[in-house]
Length: 290
Ligand code: KIV
Image 1 (cartoon, rainbow, N blue to C red):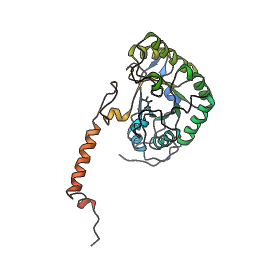
Image 2 (cartoon, rainbow, N blue to C red):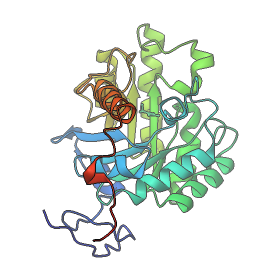
Image 3 (spheres, protein in one colour):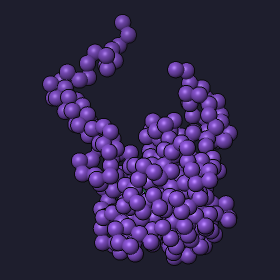
Image 4 (cartoon, protein in one colour):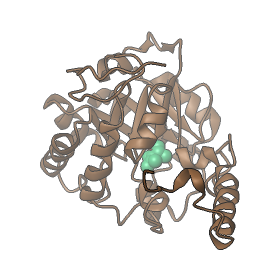
């Protein structure tokens, strides 16, 4: 396959791309749900590095620079310690590595809850530092005013309801939500509040299926499910989870590959070749020109 180095001004970069493509936009994503229906479900995956973004980009509509990078990349116990700088650095790498998908960056815990003004300042910082198209923040009705404030000032916002990992200390764990009537009603009203506030899409995470379906039907913007329902308007998974990088994953993850085993086998081969002095071989060494 030939590559080109044409500068695509809509992505502001000269990446080698298999075929020059215009980047999707937030209005494209929002417009995929028409009169409550999304004919072609939205495909979103998390990405944290430029190379990962390059590999995922052509297959996805959205790349999410999730604050799950706290656990996945940094080995942290939760998303709570993730900083704005981490999100900015990984966000910039993902934008550099992609030319097709809409890139959305998670606002980390503590960067948006205190006030809508603080949220604007930090969301603007993320967009300026990275070139991403939008931000995602967790919370429903309590965040609606902030979502409206940001959206009206040029910052597209993706909402996130149901199991919201940044609230782990309040929720007491990562169990599925929506089993009681009160929880179910809250999830649906949270989704409605975000939709009315102008969210361009809403992640529904770890929610019992009938409630995920009800919330999807109750909002005009697309919902993106994770541990929710295949009747959401799209799906997202943490890429490392679906590739099989980790042994322990939430029940809702489908492991499409077993990358961890492949890495382990490959590294074991390398280690034994080094120890046997069979690597580097002739092909990997330089000799003086004769
Ligand atoms: O941080 C993240 O990766 C997320 C997805 C799981 C939706 O928020």
